[in-house]
Image (cartoon, rainbow, N blue to C red; front, side):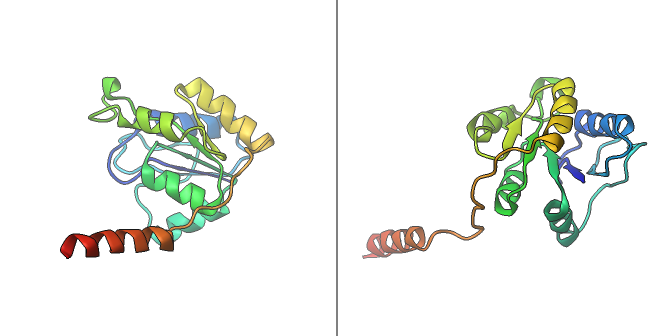
Length: 163
């Protein structure tokens, strides 16, 4: 199953249309798209504008491929659940975001095991099919809690600053 998400902040027409087009060309594949405020409504895949976090996390755990914008929350959740993630960054010049920080985030995190970045709809379509046939090698799951050593170091620093 493919779970696609645009996140909760902004619409992402290019991603929603691309995943819907792929679903049309691959009718035997289960696809669900969380579309947020995107104006376009998918015609070939079930969708919801927003879903409760518990349902979002369950869809992520159940999917074979997570397709999303390059949002830090999405990246961290994919790494926590050890789910391969195909990312399409939003572009400022196309009115998809107010800055190009998603491109920079993709450059910074796209090399991690289990994550792959594409920049075009054609590449997205090709990689969706390829990753279902030959999944990415995954790294270890990351924790959603800070390392105790980091917490102790910050605590010691703050206590020293108060002295």
